[in-house]
Image (spheres, rainbow, N blue to C red):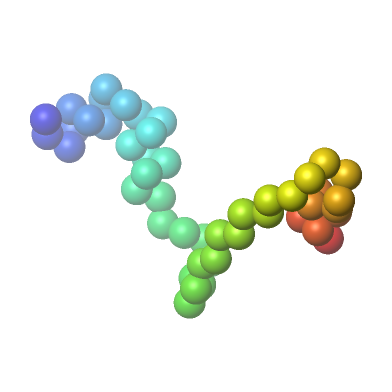
Length: 47
């Protein structure tokens, strides 16, 4: 499928996938918080 056909078939996802990042970062970290209910996982995320 050509690039033009992909844009027509999936306009939102195509543009979202190829967007340039607004900020330039040296590193990107993803952290998974695991724990029991009521121990403060959400509080850490909201800070």
